[in-house]
Amino acid sequence: MSANFARDKKINLLNEDALAMYRNLVEEVKVGIYIADTEGNLLFVNEAFAHILGFSSKEEVVGLNLAQQLYVDPEERNVFLKAMEQTGHVKDYEVRNVRKDGSVADVSVTSHFIIDDQGMIIGVEGIVQDVTEKKRLANQLLLEKKKLEELLNFDESVNTIHRVDKLVDYIVAKVGAILNVEKCSLMLLDEANNELCIKAAQGIAENVILDTRVKLGEGICGKVAREGKSFLVKNIEQEPDFHRQNRPAYRTNSFMSAAMKSKDRVMGVINVTDKANHQQESFTPLDLKVLTVIARQAAVAVENAQLNQELEFLATKDPLTNLSNYRFFVQALDDEIKRLTRLPGNLSILMIDIDHFKSYNDTFGHLEGDQLLRDFAGILTTNLRGIDKVCRYGGDEFVVLLPGANVHEAKIVAEKLRRMVELKEFKQPVTISAGVAEFKSPINRFELTLRADRALYRAKQQGRNQVSE
Picture 1 (spheres, one colour):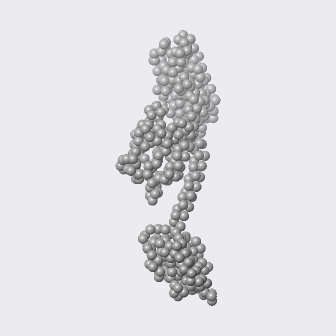
Picture 2 (cartoon, rainbow, N blue to C red; picture 1 turned 45 degrees about the vertical axis):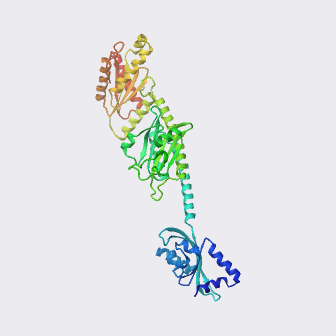
Picture 3 (cartoon, rainbow, N blue to C red; picture 1 turned 90 degrees about the vertical axis):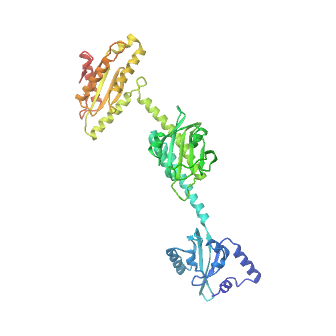
């Protein structure tokens, strides 16, 4: 079957003028048009078809096999041929096509058999379209939708974390996942020194995290923090404001930094570099928009977490001595008792009272009385272990939790504290009395505290300046 015959079967109702118009139209359209014989050998193609497949002219294509040119993968080719055999047509079948020049394009194929007047198959005709850009835009839309969903989830989750250390780690992890980057750092502004310090990071060496200090206005992140803006560098070596060689620690030249700004206050910056997608190593304006939104949400969350920690500190700290207060003591003792139900061990507490504190206060005044309390708090904190918990119980009375200590060991600790106070020079000699009690199941927090309080009472009744159990 000749090419002229196949075309004539399609246009035999047209006169010569119409035929000329038809041929001109076929050559001008953007889609590829083809006609093949029953073996799939191409008899006619327009220039668009040739260009879509990477050929320079249609003459190079005529005579080649349609299926072999469209489908490099044998499995995809078999799917196409089987569909044609079963249904007689294939519509909008998409395939990744490797062009003659080696480039890759996404192609949509529509084919159906040409049937003559007797119902016989005399050939194949159809169209091909290059949908590479269409698919790229569709994938970009999907990516934007996914990132929007992740941003919404981030906004919901980030405000549920109230500890700053956990919050900054979470923010860095989410930034890495949403933007698909290998390196990310979150720097908070030390307002006292006017410098940025790394508080959380991924993909960055530990010594860099510890040693990095950036003054406000210095470098990219320092400038971002000073101006409260976001910044995208596509190529650090070509950026006029920061023209320098890329550093060996970074795989790519592209970099982003976004200011963490809450109202008019800059909290810090978030920096990202080294896209995990090696096919697209430069960040885009969309990436910068996403990072800017995250940085804004992160700033509010960090500010709230800092305020929450300050409130917790104020709620559990005694402002005069800077020791933990009664509220903290109750929670800490409950926690220690719960721990002993899981991991059996020892726990003792000391109840300590400054002897004749009222007389000292009346003699030297409230300011000196307050200083005595602060000095005694200092003796406690410098002579106890890191795991011990020291609290101001109220007035001139203090309590110490000694995890892992039995009553004998607790008495040794109390006696050491008593001697330290006795040896220290105050406005006048000062002594303390202490009561010791050890936790024994099944007593509770109230009973343990009561036992220590009664032991303290006995020490005072027996002449003060001593330890009792």
